[in-house]
Amino acid sequence: MSAPTTAILLLAHGTPDVLSEMAAYLDKVTSGRPMSPEIVAELQHRYAAIGLRDELLPDRPPLTRWTLRQAVLLEDEIQLPVYVGMRNWHPFIAGTVAQMAADGITHARVLCLAPQNSRTSTGLYRKALEAALAEGFKDEPAAAFTFDFIPGWADEPLLTLAFAENLWPTWAEACAVVSSETGIDTHVPILFTAHSVPCRTIMSPTNPGAPDLSHLEIGASTTAHGQPSTHPPADGIQNYGPATIPDPYPVECKQTAARVAQLLASVGLTEKDWFFAFQSQGIAGAPWLGPTVEDTLQALAAEGHKAVVLQPIGFLCDHVEILYDIDIAFKKTAAALGLQLFRPESLNDSPTLIHALQNVLSTKP
Image 1 (tube, rainbow, N blue to C red):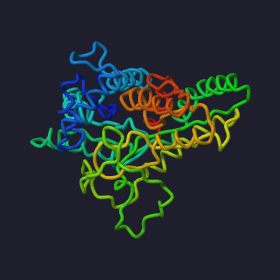
Image 2 (cartoon, helix red, strand yellow):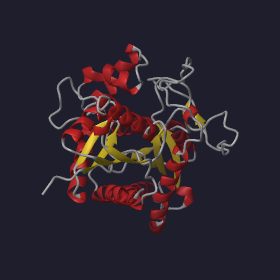
Image 3 (tube, helix red, strand yellow):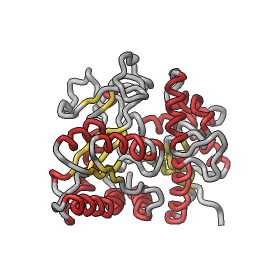
């Protein structure tokens, strides 16, 4: 029996394996736009705080470890070869494409492990894949495999369920803790988050047919120390390509949050119990999408809340934006405001997430 010629290709961001790779990694992230030594040092500090070392970790950094684990679990379910390609670090997309060709793959179903569609994520992954295929097969273009690219899958019901499954016990625990401490039956607010993107990527100012997105709040860019950036480069930190139509990303992020909240309505969550913010705004560049988590935590504390449950719904596994930005930085910010911060476990190897991936790959055009 011949080996299958169709495969699955999962695309992800990538993360450095050791601290000394940070400058080279950032060079990939920013497409060569230079980062100051202070920014490199700050990011080394953050990655060191979540366990990265000068020596390679035996089980790899969290993002790499969990992404490769998701691929293994998906392959068991879908009964097709599953490959992983990273845009900014090993295993690079180009190397994975070459391996797929060597394995005899002639067609791939391609899924970006960022469910909300954006030109800053999904769009860049597709460009990277197309570039890898063009470069890798420039001498023999007919030998390149074909592919179907799934641009976004935030509306997958099993993805919503996976987030809700992890959120419910944490929210119940937080409500019980605060109710016990105050003697008042309390609904702790839930703050859903997704990674911020540069403001200029969400719509084109020259497109007269663009829908009105003026209701979206825009936050300021911040430096490595959380202060507003005073010298943003005119083009931000990366060329994301022409914005000829509004980017669906901010709308899809909020829709994901609303779907998860709706699933918890059966256990008492109401519309007034949840909020949404964008996290991890860029440490350099033009203004990024808001509101920020920091501002939202301050507003919740001012309203008299004693705790908050923060669930990121734009990330599928642990990495620096969760393990540092939330578990260290946001917890410190919350504590200074008199808030306890609870976070549900990341999806990581959630069986429901794996079934969501399987369903998307089987049903999306």
